[in-house]
Amino acid sequence: MRFPQTFIDDLKRQADIVRIVQDYVTLKKTGANWSARCPFHKETKPSFSVNPSKEIFYCFGCQKGGSVFNFIMEIERVTFPEAIRIVAEKAGVALPKMVDNDRFEARRRDSDQVIELNQWALQWWQDQLQGKSASAVRDYLKQRGITDETSQTFKLGFAPDSWEALSTHLRQKGATQEQLEKSGLVVKKDEGGSYDRFRGRLIFPVFDAQGKPIAFGGRTLDPEGEPKYLNSPETPAYTKGRHLYGLNLTRDEIRRQEFAILVEGYLDLIVPYQFGVRNLVASLGTALTPEQVKLIGRFARKVVVNYDGDRAGVQAAKRAIETILAEDIEVKVLVLPDNADPDDFIRKNGVTEYQQRRGAAQPHIQFVIDQAVRDRNLHSPADKAAAVEETLPFVRAVRNRIQKREYFDIAMDSLRVQKDQRRELWQQTRGASTDAATVQNVFARRVKPTVAEEKLLGLLLASDELRNIVLPRLEPTDYDGLATAEIFKALTALSKEDKEISFDSLSEATAENSTAAEVLPRLLINETAESFDESLADANSCLDALRLMKLDREIEEIGAQIAEADRAGRNEERDSLAMKKLELSKQRSSFLPGRKPEN
Ligand SMILES: [Zn+2]
Image (cartoon, rainbow, N blue to C red):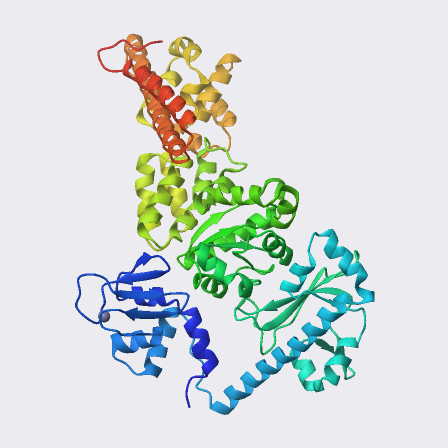
């Protein structure tokens, strides 16, 4: 009894060796490798290396090396089966039941047989693509701009519109009915027997990273045909969400370029490939899985997500970002104009334009922020809280602490979050988890009325005479954004219309505003004991205080905008903002004690 070999192979693939080794030594990236001072012998200069794509470690000092299992055996001093258990636990992979060799061998035989049948089918479909009946497919490929060479590279094929042409061919090659059914190439009939699954379709074979054909996708040629794309079911050779389309052809280029471009569909990969962009993989419609990200991670630690720009594509991209960040891989996002997919874009605009845009792809956080502020008004505290809430999970998902802080600052600047709120949000973000309620709390507390606004309102409510003098001088900008803005608004409106100012009239005018409901009784219950002159002086200084706070907020906000423009290299914008900030600072200094306030 032992662990099945397929499990050990899969585990090795899923357990990122860099992450496992990181638990014991601090690795630094050096080219394709990660290096550190060796944990197995004493040294001052690092001669210990880990190569994630080859899944091995090696020390040039003490010559120890091997797989992730050898590493654990050496450092934990355990046996091989024990090392497997430890690695599985660290990688979050469930251990299989110990299986006897016969069953394991049977599974592998099944898988090998499926691949052999796939091989035969693939060859036959490729031949059919050259035949007379395939002229419509060849026209379609020509119209999509796909050359013969490309179609051979990707081993595209044509499944004729027949119920049994492929089955007949496979039987002639020696396939049994049982093998046919296991392969997923046919569909079983209830009354016994089977028919070909792919009929009248352009065939895209899917290969594993080693280049074995494990599954197929077939595109219908009938404009009314349903579904547009038909895929292989799961078989002993194929588990959904474990593979990436194109990786067998692009893995070396991905390693060389040190990043992968992630696209959605077959043609999104094939067309750029034909034009010379060769570090791509396609996730093929289904949501990107952690296994797929780990697979990419063996070849590069950076991914540019290039999904469709429509709503569904944006949602899929956001899900992909979270999955990628969870595997400690850096993500950028490329959104092409007019919702174009990579296939369309390259055919219309050429590869140079594509590469330029790819070079300017946004860091994931900028993409997430753009989505979060879309259709929201950051001057509204509720909208701002919602945008922050939507953004923070993508900061929290970043594993590197320094990067996490950088992304946090970018998000806070872009969303114009004030300093005292930032401190609290950072406390929450660096920790494990935040639920939405706590983000809301941070912002809810912010909109509590200040002393100055409450005092001013109290004075205004207490005296008709004071209202007549002060209200005409009050600008909407004086109270916009304040917790009690609704009360100021109602007060101004009522008094303009010469209506009675009372608890009832104010409550009615501020209906559904919770701050007003809470504050109004408190304000109205107080009777002022001050003389008119004292009240007027107090009201004036309250108004000054409000204007001062507003200037402070504006200065802080411009500061954030300057930082943002500076980061994005928009120097002109940065300089003109700096001028504006200077002006505001001047205005502010006119409020300093000892000077008579303007206005
Ligand atoms: Zn060593």
